[in-house]
Length: 405
Image (cartoon, rainbow, N blue to C red; front, top):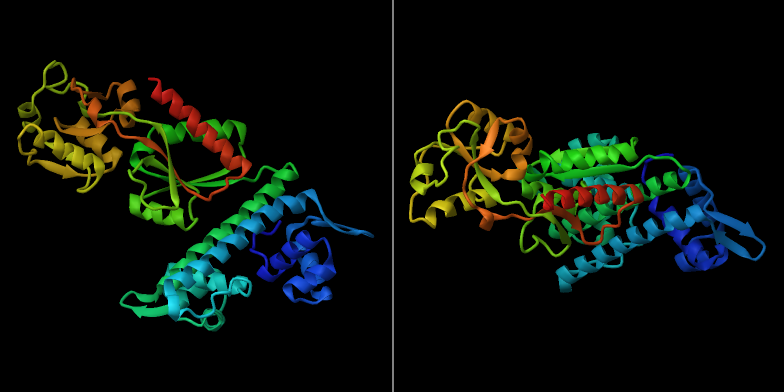
């Protein structure tokens, strides 16, 4: 089955026939000739390699495969309609054509998302495999359709106006819905071809995520899982634009935006950690002065754990240690701690393997007040496929095990 995004006009014809159960009625609804609708459905069926309708004397009836795909097409259409309404609200009296969602083409949306990512027409054309004049023409046709500016020159290249950003985000989510529809059709045939893109932050990388992936692989060995690491703000952007399916790690409260929902899996406390035979390892009562006597490895400024580190000393009326190395890399932190008397403040969950191998150990300090919720951030309107839902179950099961320890 092709993974190319179908022609949006073909998808509109498909929706119209599904709702009206008639080629002639669909023709009246979307102002396309009956031969054009028949041809659109035939092309879509070839792309999907599925029969979408059964033609009978009393009408045209959608098949099971058609119903599965229709749910994704409906969601895609709603996303574009929502984008059109939002653009209209934001522009107010300056609004151009705010009923454009039923006139958009796949080529226009691909051009828009490519320019949004590359910030350059030449690089965007190369990324999606078309000539620069073709991409430029599609982009300018989109501007004419909306009757508002979409592109502007910046010091970095080509930037998007607010309206263009809204539409680009919607377009990427639309493409994601259609790809999920492909996966659901494959599952209907008994073909395991699920995909999952996970954004991973440090607190989830060492035990929770690897364990859940291994659990998933045992039940769904052919599922393709891609893990993307990065700073929270970058991952959040990719989550909202549909580049990743879910974000796993320390949650933010309140949630960062209205379109994001969060689910707590467990809430481990932070711990002061050093090498197994650290000079403070056997001390039962550790003071702030003891902690200030040693060099530290700490996260970047403005991160939640860095703020907890600074608060630890501030609550005691003391200045933080001056010998600091800033890093969020567990590999680097481990190496630094193993070869020195350095300390770090980190979630005990993150160094579980190092504890089991007797490499690192938490010091005897009660830091239960520093518990941080670790869990899943998702788009509020995300509807996971069966494969994606199975991975969520794996995460929740591992979260319950960690919460009970």
